[in-house]
Image (cartoon, rainbow, N blue to C red; front, side, top):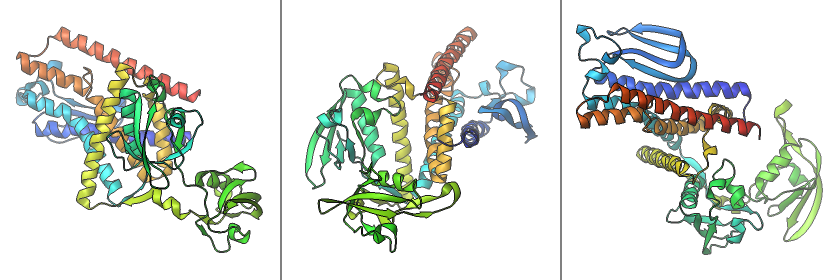
Length: 450
């Protein structure tokens, strides 16, 4: 994860931006609906910056606690309305207009996710075919007959194009039935069916970071085969040839390309012993690694490139502008539905409550994605924006979804709920949010303590 300062700054940027987008949805639709807006605040607590503008003298401010925000509308339930403002209070506007204002916040979060994914898809994306890596002996995956290099052609009725869609399908099937039906393609091109049966163990496997270890396999990574040699590089000088496969460096076992990069990166300029296979025969050679960078950024180089067989597991997906927009809409829609399904499964106990993240964990992911680059941070923002949209649509009275329920009830019964009923609803809503926050903070602390 990133440094504490990077985590904090990234978290503040992420939350402030997404809250601003959410509240702007309420604000702009409220203006279109003819409502008077008293304040637009990003954050809670004492304002650290504010100004007033517009014919309504609306106050725009940034507050000291960057964990939310709000738009305050004129409301006759909070005090008298001046004659010139009659009809412009929130509760004096038609119910459909009020519902539109309440729904606009989550809707703008979903629209932001669409724009973010469109920006990520427009230049094209590199995707990795979902395939099986190392299989743990006597695990669920091993008992189902999964083998290293198997490509996942289908999960149930879903034909995943990448690991993300495969993961969603695996979770959906596992949580619903305790079984994951797979159609696999081996390295020779042959197809077969296999079923991972976890029985009643699905809740444990949905705990953060538990899925792949629990199922018993890792995501496929390219084997450490030599596909090309850098002219004059360490490997070429030592006599390593295209087609060789690295199996160990300084006694550390090497299975995948990631293993090799990790070991070599930590030994810039050092002499190492490299074990490899050539035409099925083991051999050993001593060589001195190259290096690049300086200071803490200095890393080792061995001077080899990926083998051609690895290319089959990667592809670049390109889109026209219209196709990228369509893909962004589809991505946002499927992610929203998946989030809602997982929340529902948490309520029924089929998915672990440990998946609820609090501000500490979100900040760590924000910092990590920011350090990895803009595209990663933008993808993180899209995911959090969708989560924020879904959360606010929950029928909890203090959230937008609960307020929409109030408006629908008023429309049906021909009048607002009694003050007592609304107060009771608010109390239940606050209790529900406190319970949710307690789970989130507990999970954050538990992760920190390991």
